[in-house]
Each structure stands twice: as C-alpha cells, then as structure tokens.
Length: 104
Image 1 (cartoon, one colour):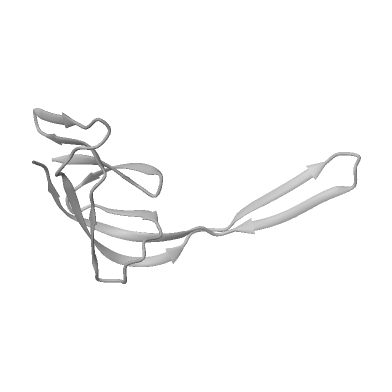
Image 2 (cartoon, rainbow, N blue to C red; image 1 turned 90 degrees about the vertical axis):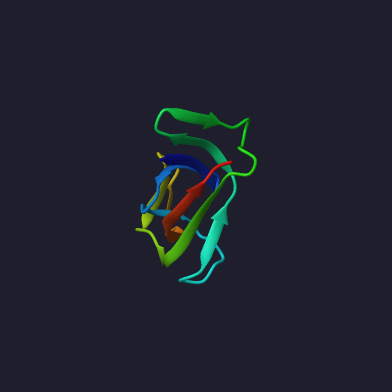
C-alpha cells in the first residue's frame, strides 16, 4: 500500500516504514504529525485518486530529526559590467518516518 502526499509545496510517494526528508515542520523530535493532504492511495489493485485531495484519508508519521541540507552556492555575474555576487543557502528539513496510511 502506498500513498501520494502533499506537504511543503511538494508531492511525495510514501510507503509504510519509509523515512523521508520534507520541508521543516514545527513538531518536536519524537512527536507525531498527521498529514491530511492525500492525493492518491493505492492498495494493490484498488486505486483511489482525489480531486484534488481524498476526504478522510490520513497518513501518520513520527518526527525522527531536524536538520539543514548541504550548502548551495548562488553566483550571479554580468560580463563586462564589473558585477559579481556570491551567496550561499542551506535549507532546513524535517526527517519523518511513515507509521500508517489510512484511507476511507
């Protein structure tokens, strides 16, 4: 059984027991989070597709850790104009573990 969820402006295909990194959530480590924006649920041969979400479907997950990703360098340059700008960015994330997928 798998589901397609939407969180942090992105879509993820999740399976029970899987760990994934999503945009930062305001839940402490060890806490549980219920994701209710479920776009699709598939259980073997039966597939349910929402329009756009499935009402009553939820995915329960446990927060494993918080962290920050690798640094991404942004370099802007205009030739012959004596313009150069360097900037770095590290995106915060929350690692979650999928506990259960429930669909009505």
